[in-house]
Length: 279
Image (cartoon, rainbow, N blue to C red; front, side, top):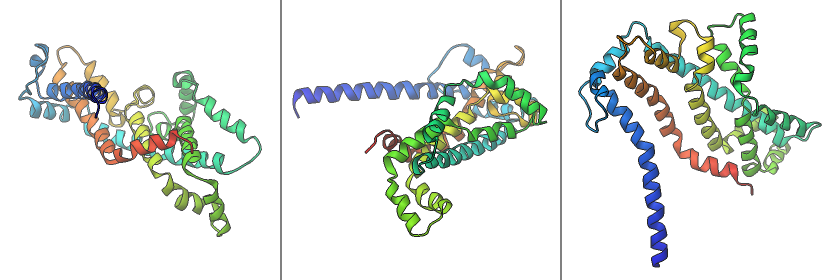
């Protein structure tokens, strides 16, 4: 290996090491602060863990004003259902655009893509008025069903189909007598499983971290999600405010996301790269 190549390799490893440090350092700070009491956190940051992990965890789980266990369950139900629904419906819609040649096909594709340009905040007032008239306020349904309209997931799936799903496979299945639903569920979906896993992770994380819409829809304490509970704990009265509990609750909120990511991480690199390159 030449001297220039060694130098380039050293620079690359240095930059990557710096990026890894920046990514992990804040998680380290979070976990460390979750083990410290409020007075210790007020004194400044410390690299050494504290002795208040058990106390912070106990106070968070036994806080009468914050049903944390209900919040975890609610977030899991909403995020899991939303991710599954958005990925499945988007994959099916993208398959229809990719595999069928029908009138206004390009117009439908363009219309779905244009929806990506509309911010959620623009439609929130009308959305809240609609679900209020339907009697769906303080319910999980308005947070789950609309997730099937996921233009970003749809666009990624169309790109993935174009890269990894030759139409000859679909035509062969049709010639063999396979109906369209069987072809999609048992031939197409196994082929695009990496893309489904990647988009499932992204959709789950987005729904899990969503605060804006759930905070407007959910009113009952027993139905609130973790982001809402974290905001409530953070905005508590000064005399009751405890940063140790805040950091502990944030740590608890990160654990399910980390587990989902670790379980499906092997699909991420292959899914993203394959969906972005045609050929």
